[in-house]
Image (cartoon, rainbow, N blue to C red):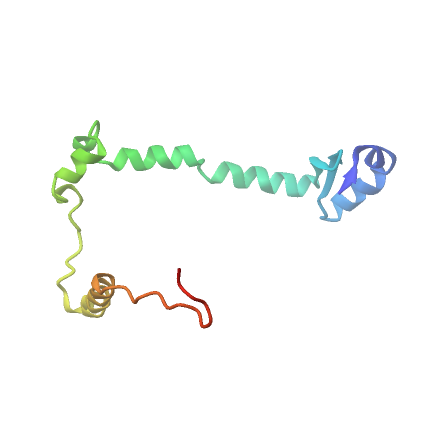
Length: 127
């Protein structure tokens, strides 16, 4: 990182660094405020930005696939539906899911088991 004053005095050298593929960060009072990049790197970033949809565009795409009957429902109303709206579209009864089912059952059993009592550290008295 280089200060604005130093960057002003060393601009030709910084441009050569950027051309060589090294991004140069310029700071004001210790805070990064700008970056000098090569034209090739800048063009690559511009292409990448244009090819990747923004977060909001992806959200809009997801919303387009949400069934219309979910619109306007509150979370408690969705939960009251008994899960019918979110029924799995995969047959988990298939034998290939047996290992997963056994693992899930073991996790549920572990959650339901009573917790081990907290052990006191040796040498400490309880109050």
